[in-house]
Amino acid sequence: MTPTPTHLTLANGVQMPLLGFGVYRSSPEETVQAVSTALADGYRLIDTAAAYGNEAQVGEALRRSGVARDEVFVTTKLWISDYGHDEALHGFDRSMRKLGLDKLDLYLLHQPMPTEWERTVAAWKAAGQLLESGRTRAIGVSNFSTELLGDLIDRTGIVPHVNQVEVHPFFTQPELQATHRRVGIATQTWSPIGGVMRYFSDDPETAQSPLSHPVVTALAEKHGRTPAQIVLRWHLEHGFSAIPKSVRAERIAENFDVFGFSLSAEEVAAIDALDTGVRSGPNPADINTSKYKLTIAD
Ligand SMILES: NC(=O)c1ccc[n+]([C@@H]2O[C@H](COP(=O)([O-])OP(=O)(O)OC[C@H]3O[C@@H](n4cnc5c(N)ncnc54)[C@H](OP(=O)(O)O)[C@@H]3O)[C@@H](O)[C@H]2O)c1
Image (tube, rainbow, N blue to C red):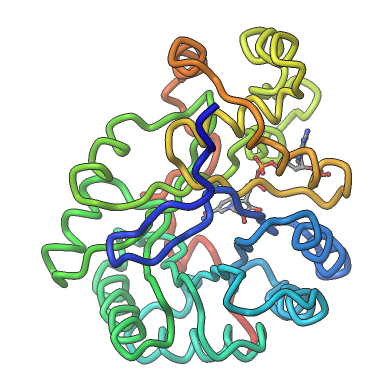
């Protein structure tokens, strides 16, 4: 079997691990242990955000781990309350202080704000300056559509290295993937095993999950793998960088153990066919500072 690539190369040549570890909805109390376990298991990409309230705990786990700083790819995100040029630079400094880092690997604008677009563009220009000055090795966005990516690039001339978006077997965003390939943007996939379908459901009892779909469970049976491993392997076959989250040691290990098998083109296509075209997370067009009141404390 040809060895599976473990990294992808961003447009500026920076190497980013394909499989990372997310900490959204990991409480501060759980985060040090979860990230420590992930680093011990071999994960080398940690995805946090100012809005998750656990940057300090991610930083603590990094320091405790003994893993060399340059071996771990750290991502954090600017929250919308800090959009605007000077506000964004301040938000970056605050995140770095909480993480306890001098240099970041990837800085993302957490959401587009179509109704506060000038502030979004100003924040993106600030991110460009952070890249230029070497304070972060790469920059990107999250939850941007083809249209908003186009306008952002037209306005600033700065192409994001990454767009981090909701992707799992029930929501695959093929048109956006085509945009990413055309423009040279890496796709990073959040809720890769469908977490959002459960935690944003009004009724968790009836919430659907790709992990219990018969196509996925049949492939799990066939390969002697778990449904989560089948779905994460599907992301890798597509060349996506996936960032599953768990606070349970056995699942953290399970989700990283996906490099020793592969899916055929037909098996990948069978999972592709599960797409419903319906997102489970919030519609990015609806996000603005009037609706989302969170602000980030210094
Ligand atoms: N940019 C954005 O707007 C955005 C939005 C959402 C998420 N994200 C990022 O993406 C990361 C992952 O997304 P996510 O946390 O929404 O969803 P996810 O990784 O698809 O799913 C996480 C959920 O699945 C459970 N789980 C984990 N491994 C499992 C396994 N092997 N079998 C069964 N269940 C399993 C977890 O519970 P336990 O913890 O109890 O194991 C948790 O409830 C986040 O942590 C965050 O870093 C970004």
